[in-house]
Image 1 (cartoon, rainbow, N blue to C red):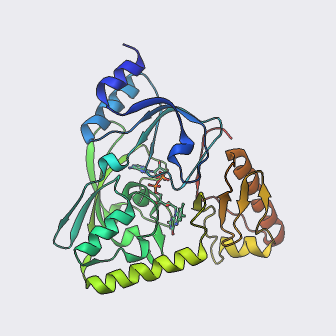
Image 2: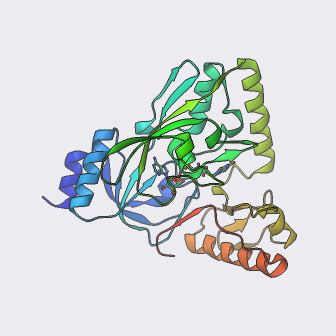
Image 3: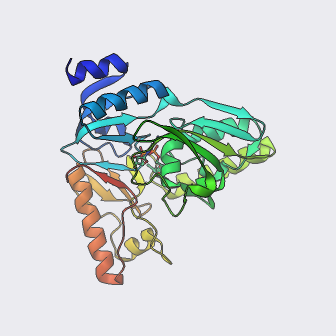
Length: 299
Ligand SMILES: Cc1cc2nc3c(=O)[nH]c(=O)nc-3n(C[C@H](O)[C@H](O)[C@H](O)COP(=O)(O)OP(=O)(O)OC[C@H]3O[C@@H](n4cnc5c(N)ncnc54)[C@H](O)[C@@H]3O)c2cc1C
């Protein structure tokens, strides 16, 4: 059996030469050699066994909202943990979310059950897995404040549970950053609240987001990490770079921390804008802007 046949035998949703622009909110990125969307833990394990046998590297993605994939695409396999693994269960004030569940869906489930704690992060367009990996956060709440434990599969295929105190959450990083572990599900600890108040807070945060962020065009959110003591967007704006563009990629006029895809941007265009912004901010302020967005493949 060749690799295609082996994978098709263990996973219903496998394709080859899959354009990554279909799976990233930036809507850029060339093809992944292999693209799998497992529907349960057993399929993940079987895919991993095949990849290990064939010595093929893999990359896990969630909703693709923090990724910049090269135009040449990705060698090896991409395993997407998305809506096929997105169950959410509620038990008292605890929620159990599979890693493919969107944060928005999880927050809506919390609202339905009058549980408070997720309002501020309800508008982040990531999956629970991606949000844990990144320790995503907004408006004063980050994942580290609501995660009790995370269950994951190690690269060897073992299933382990790690408690919050051992996850090493930091600014946009966690125990999972740069590891091969696959986040499977997450136990969240929320608090009892009042549905009307939770709903009002979610609306308030959503209005803030819509007025301050370019949400109607493709992007990957804030491209750069916040340098200590500064805001990346403000530094970029002060360099006069709002609206700076290369090809189809442009520094957003609404929020200078965002780079938007005006429709036909390539990853090379986005990279050129990133480099220019980094150079100009360094020249003017001596500050190095590090990317928050994960840059994948050969650029
Ligand atoms: C319009 C917009 C607004 C945004 N606003 C915010 C914001 O306010 N705050 C914020 O923090 N972020 C924000 N982001 C960025 C992004 O949504 C978050 O980083 C989010 O947590 C990424 O989740 P994802 O599922 O899309 O992960 P992906 O982008 O698919 O992946 C991100 C990283 O997580 C890893 N990963 C994903 N799933 C798993 C898994 N199951 N197991 C192991 N590793 C995994 C990937 O390998 C990758 O390294 C925004 C993005 C956009 C487009």
